[in-house]
View 1: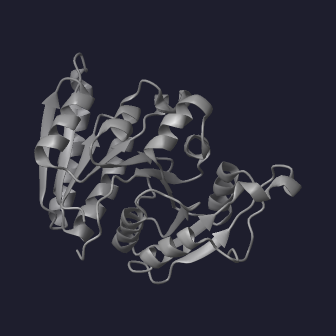
View 2: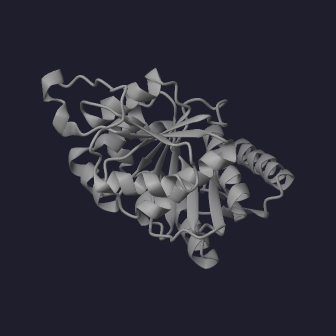
Length: 282
């Protein structure tokens, strides 16, 4: 499915951590990896050197894993330069990290992260780094409410990352309609949801093509709180949340669970926006 993956790297250490997910996915997919740093006008020389050192470390790490890799350094507007490379090279998937200042704004208003996830023509994985030293997840939590766009690609993305780290995957469903009796308090169940919807059942079948041991859990309460409590209680290493373009646009007006989980996640988080790549046997 993914033949060309791009990882945007900058002078911040969280971008290097995020790029390591791209390295792992490129290795398991046998994809070509492009590591890219864009120096905006006026960036201090010492910060440019930090980004260049991160590129070198990632390049050597990827090469050591037999990943086909290249490193690009450009100058100018980061979004324009990344967008141009994505289009020129027909990139399938782009990784980028959030920055600290992103979290102080309503869903990254006027930030590079927002522009990348909304406007790149490829699928996008936006990484929120909480624990830089926990880059090898063993327990991945995947919230899923059904009716997700491009479920085959999301299952492929989750499954291949799980394969890369030999991680277990838990599909987590928290229907908000059930939280009334708890007065907004999340109460994860110890049992899988009974009578699961056809959409969720279909996604689980797709996921088990790549992760045969995947399981399901049911939470209760407002979705964002249920997700963060579940991740903390079960000591998950990584949350992968799907996003839709419509949902991201609506969040600018009214907010959504993705935004709240981004702010409160107890572990590293990937917000994944698929744009419809069909799974292949790679």
